[in-house]
Image (cartoon, rainbow, N blue to C red):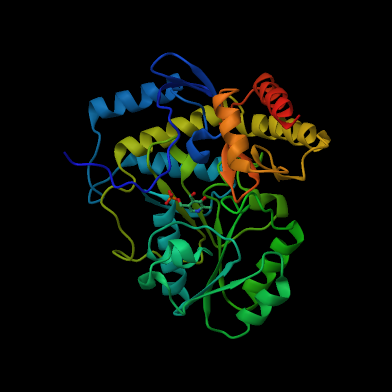
Amino acid sequence: MMNLFEVYSLYNIEPVRGKGCYVYDKDGNEYLDLYGGHAVISIGHAHPHYVEAIAHQVSQLGFYSNSVENSLQQRLAEKLGRISGYDDYRLFLCNSGAEANENAMKLASFHTGKTKVLAFSKAFHGRTSGAVAVTDNPKIQSPFNVTPNVEFVPLNDIEAVEKKLASGEFAAVIIEGIQGVAGIQCPDDNFMQQLREATKKYGVVLILDEIQSGYGRTGKFFAHQYAGIRPDIITVAKGIANGFPMGGVIISPIFEAKPGMLGTTFGGNHLACAAAVAVLDVFEQERLIENAHAVGEFLLAELRKMKKLKEVRGRGLMIGVEIDGSGSEMRKKLLFEKHIFTGGAGVSTVRLLPALCLQKSEAERFLEAFNDLLE
Ligand SMILES: Cc1ncc(COP(=O)(O)O)c(C=O)c1O
């Protein structure tokens, strides 16, 4: 019998069904999902409009290659441009967050003719070759991935950035809108503005990885929009298609598209596009970004009142809570005693990354359970 290559540590629970912000196991036990399958579930589980759109599309045409016209891609691009405020940018579709970052860095290198990328301490950008090279975690880099083309500087340290960029060797700076895997670390708005200025000054491409922090999660379409800046490239994935695997690269008009410079077999396929268009329909119909802002601010304010917490970080529904004790123990208690899924990071952080349709009453249920366990 073939077994699985065991690289994940698993909870002894199998969700088999979901609805909104809840998942259920085979015995019908209900769990409040404040993890969203790692920030992926944006409009909620099994949303009827989403289910209908995918079912209809697969009944027509599930896949054809990128060698023929696919108007669903254009529909998605138009809608995404309008809703995100990037109408004048262009969209390249792929299959995951790591792949989006690979393509972003490749574009930057093609464009500038330079080889190096500057990234930040504690950054996470994915596990493929280039993406893991700009990820600040030697444990997940094989010797093959380590390259002199990548350098790291501390977050929020503009002097360190300027010093590196002045060398003239850098094609790009890559930064998360809010660092997710690092436990929700927010760059200062002021730093983001200075970073934009510095990258312009040195002719370096600014790549905003909004894979976790984007798609409405923080209460704006992109986290960097709080700083009022416009990057050269933005990468998206996770919430884009509510769990259907998809990634995207949003590309400013300064880049010239040349046939063959980027490509993928599965990227932008019919089913993925139908899922992603349905996600944006629901964003508009249910005003999910406004909801993420309102419920997120409520959660943040209430958490900040809890005296036993060491720190509360985040924006909207991207929240990191630093507890006095083990984060993984707390998450286990939340899951097994209170039936609430949460995310983790580091030793003492609990991460909240729920679907953007989270209701205030659901947030209150979490606050009560969490408070109980902190006693
Ligand atoms: C900020 C960020 N970038 C990139 C990735 C990688 O995305 P994927 O796992 O879809 O390759 C992740 C995944 O957690 C992420 O949080």
